Image (cartoon, rainbow, N blue to C red; front, side):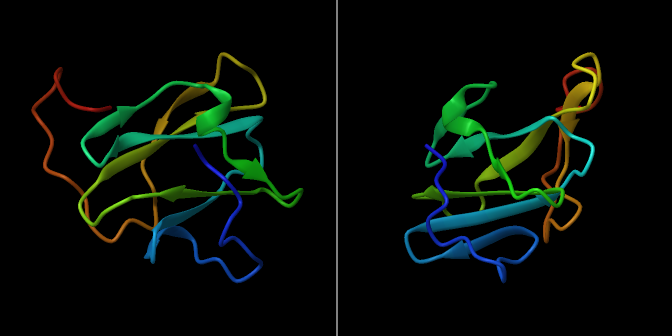
Length: 109
């Protein structure tokens, strides 16, 4: 479950590993919701449940802390735009590494 533990005004953009997990921060000023989806510790966490909803700070930044995240865990953001029809997965533009994906149509668009 995402929390706001370890989140403050100096939380870096993207995913940052810290003791006990990782912080996540994304810029999505026109989004109505941003969810963290991925495989953390071998457990798939996906969807639009409240447990995966990142918190918006009123200035377009979305943040969350997830415990037990490890180096190499795969993640992406599910972003819902101002219109619910404008929703989809977005990669983290601050990602330091990208995973090799399967060829289309089996890829993680």
